[in-house]
Amino acid sequence: MLHVVHHPAYVSPATPGSHLRFDKYGLVMEALHESAVPYVAHAPQPMPREWIAMVHDPAYVDEVLTLSVPPDKERRIGFPVTERVMRRSMLSPGGTWMAAKLAQVLGYAANAAGGSHHALADTGAGYCVFNDLAIAANRLIAEGDAARILILDLDVHQGDGTASLLAGRPEIFTLSIHAEKNFPVRKARSTLDIGLEDGTGDSAYLAILADTLPRVLDDFAPDLILYQAGVDPHGEDRLGRLALSDAGLDARDRYVMRQARGRGLPVASTMGGGYGTDRMAVAHRHAACMIRMAEEI
Image 1: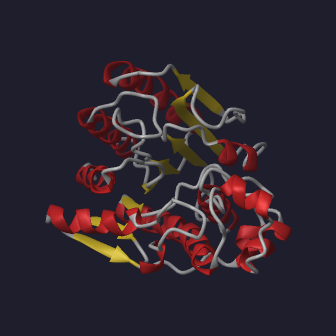
Image 2: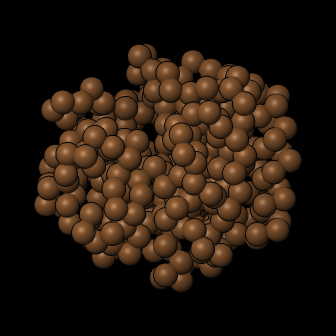
């Protein structure tokens, strides 16, 4: 059975002055419904401010919560921080944390949002306000729910914010496999970064994943995986530079889950990136990821 964390407030219209829409998160739930695959939806609570402020600069957290983010930071984020954006930015880390807690019981759970891996300590960036992956990982460890966490980032863009926020944390391993020439221009230093050439397709990508992931799992020995399951490595993605097919994404996700389950590790996924003019096609890619991960439990 697929377990998905979703909240109606994940969905909101484009903010004034921005073309970015947040309807993808609702379309993903429509795609799951169309698939006729049985699933259970779980509603998250907003992440309490104190947990966000343990990862982000408290002054920046207050800017978001009081809707007073300076224009230069809003430009870096990519859209104004409105009341609805603020609310979804609190809910998304709560959703990733809830998915991780569910995964520890069920083996796998998905947050139907999240993956805001570009958000930095004192500012958002790249359509990301708060870094749900870093916030959730920090809380899970602080409360004793996990001792060692692997953040596996297979979005087409490097998880620079996650790497920066968690640098120097030996109990959290950040692994990013991304398109080297894609955003961000200035890369951070993850525990392990693998930058791929433009146009890398299924065979080469899967070979690199197979050469890397088992070694990290065996050497680092995490007890939980937070999986940034972006679908933007797809060849038709508007912001991607890789060339994975539908079959390649399918093989990627199933390989991740099989490696995890073979070691008895729970996996919680976040949606991450996926962009294109055919928004329903992108939503179906995200939904298909969740479905096949659940099938591998």
